[in-house]
Length: 160
Image (tube, rainbow, N blue to C red; front, side, top):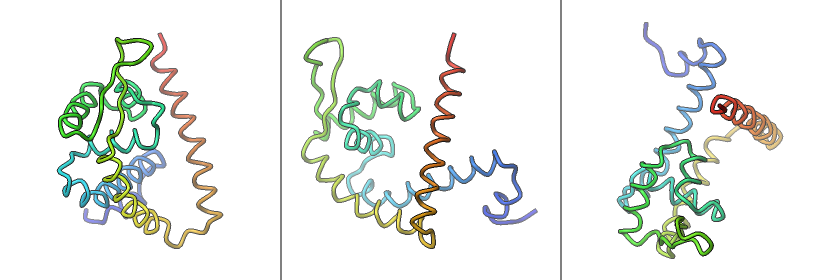
């Protein structure tokens, strides 16, 4: 049976619709940012580490990034090593506990991210085209509730 992705999503059960829509949105976002990533020869994971640190400077350890992005620590560490080697990331021992290291974006990384936010803004304009401000507010409100529910489910599943 042939059909577009939209046709398949429309015929899906609610859980499948949510998952398929999230995957489709993520792919579209990755495509929108691809130009900048390619220009600076960054992998998707390196890009996401940089963006995370830009938006969450207080959560600046590999563990913070892995936990919040639901990716393995080894993948984050690999990205951190590559970014540090390219001088896009500075790695410093924690001032209070030298067993931990803190990650900081360099000015060059910040410049790259500043340039990329135009693409992100254009992507969001496209995604929310024909969606009113009220509908966007409602969407983000519901999305926040869903994220909290998912967080509780994840915490319950990982509890001993």
